[in-house]
Structures are given as C-alpha cells and as structure tokens.
Length: 272
Image (cartoon, rainbow, N blue to C red; front, side):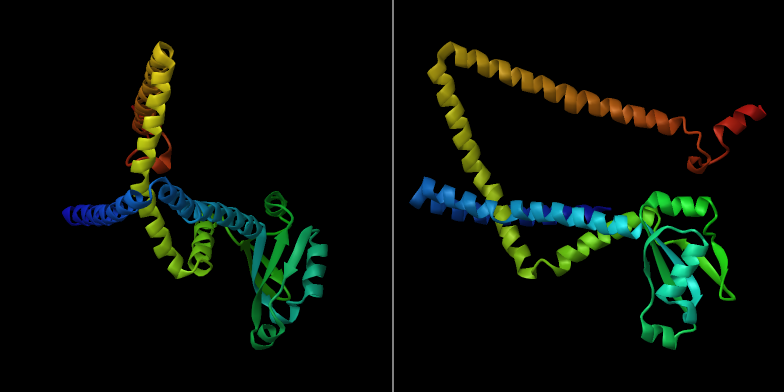
C-alpha cells in the first residue's frame, strides 16, 4: 500500500517540477513580451488538448455505432462449409422466417480449407434479435446440414461495454501519432501555468468593475459570492452526504440473493 502511495506522490512531484519549469519559462516570456505572449499561448493551448477532447468525443460516438452494430449480430458456429454461402443461409433465414439486414459468410478460401465455419446474421434492431430467440425462430442449438450448430448473440451487455472501450482505445492508439502525446503534455503544462496569469487578470478586471460601480458593485459582489457559497454548501456538501448515506442504507438492507454474503434476509426472517 505504501509503495503505491509513494508512486502516486512521486508522479505528483514530477508533475509539479515540470509545471514549475514551465512556469519559469512562461514568466520570462511574458516579462519580455507582455499581453501578446499570453494571447499566443492561449491560441497554442486551444489548438492542442481541447481539440483532443473533441476528437475523444467523436471517437466514443463512433465506437458506440460499432457497438450498436455488433449487438445486432447472431453468430452460428459449426455450420458445414458447403452450406456457408449467401444463397444457402438466405434460404435458411427464409425457412425460419428471420428478417435479417445482412448475412456475413466466410471467404471462399476459408470454406475450402475448413469443414465447418462461422456465419453471422445481422438483424435490423436488437429487439428483432431478441424476438427471434423469444419466438424460438433461433435456438441455442439447432441442426443445419446434418451438423449440430451453436447459435448465440455475438455480444452481450458486459462484452459490449468492454468492446466499446477497446475500440476507443485502438483508435486513440493507432490513429493519433505517438509524437502528439508529448506535445499535448506540454500543452497541459502550459495551461496549468497560464491559469495563474489568466485568473489574476480576471480578478483585476472584477475588482476594477466593482470599484467603478461603488456601493452597487460592492453589494452585487457580496450577494453573488454569498449565493455561490451557499450553492457549493448544498450542491456539493449536503447532497453528496445524502447520496452516500442512502447508498449505505441500500447496501445495509440488501435483499437480492446474488448480493448477499450469507442467508438472504427474507429467508432468514421467514424461518424464525
């Protein structure tokens, strides 16, 4: 435990050292060039990690589309290779009254070298897939060309979530050049150091406006700060405490059998 705490503190220490070095360089640049340097640094920052956040959102959205496609697929294992053609599978779907969007069959060279292959049926929606199993148009085991074929959805809920993260990570690892990460890290350090100058400028502007408005500015500032303090007290403090308290109550009064460490509470109560 202490080893991992040391690793966390060490990483935090290295980040602080890197930020201090970046801040020293930034102070020197701003001392020599003033406000234009701050503007150029802001432009530099906006062109790096904020754009990556946009790319990350787009990656997650695309991975979700891939995930939605995979969850509509049923895989048939052990289909005789001689029947793994579009025509034969389409005939099977017609006989079973299966409304599928497309059929994915193995390539011809694989059919020639294997006795059995895997065929995928792509349904229009997940509901259509579930309905096919519910109506027993498809069953976990069925006969196809004299062979016993296993049939199952390609991806369940948990596997789909794992696949979503894998697809997203693959795109970030393969599509984004490795040299980008170093540049993005420097951009993050610039942002951390630049905030000191930006916040000081915001505070100076606010104080100037407050003084120019006299008593009205003073009253408005006090009111706004009081309101923000109360919002933080209730939104962050009180509601966070209540949510954790309710979660603890739910855990303490758990009745679901797969979440219990011993005899279910209802069963124990009824036996007394």
